[in-house]
Length: 260
Ligand code: SF4
Image: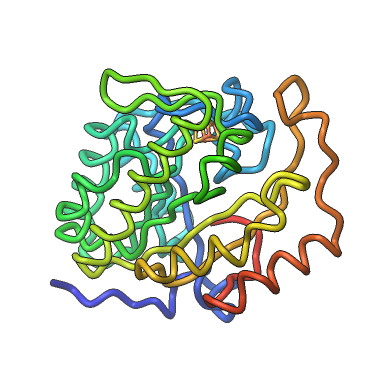
């Protein structure tokens, strides 16, 4: 397997941020959960700036788009799949795209960002494709907290609501982290900080994901999106963000930029 060069990864290396670029390939329109801060007309808020829309590409169109982008800017070193929905609610498109990109370039850094519901069955393939890391957005490890964050979770043919939805999502996220680490894939946890909901939970969450093998955590303040159940909440204050990051940082290295 080709050894990946993380020194070119703008997410993991400050010096690389100004020298190397990354590109997101929008091949994944569907989502298998409903977060209470998400307006589905826009991209996954777990991974993108709120309010941004993206047109969806097929895997072959995505490869062409990448090839054209690389011609214009050869400094692109990282290719990510993060939406506009969830990559693993669109398994075929996601894996085909990763395979096409990997065939085209054995060295480019590949990453994927997901809510973690359906990643575990594909961990082996992600490792085979030499994916550099997977971002898993974990906003709660306790159903009592998670039930305020998720309206529903669809796992196969079953739809869960309320605390059951949060419980199922966390069980699957747990399996995802364990499966990725069993295949030696780096796991980055993304946590959206939601004031009054999970802002006192960051230490506990970080300790739990660390015990499963997660490598690093990124705590992202929620940006309230109008007309969503959590849209009336205020944005976290800078003090709340500092405190939450301090809680999490006791257990796990933190990333200090906003997005994947
Ligand atoms: Fe929206 Fe949540 Fe699905 Fe992302 S994971 S697209 S934020 S519902």
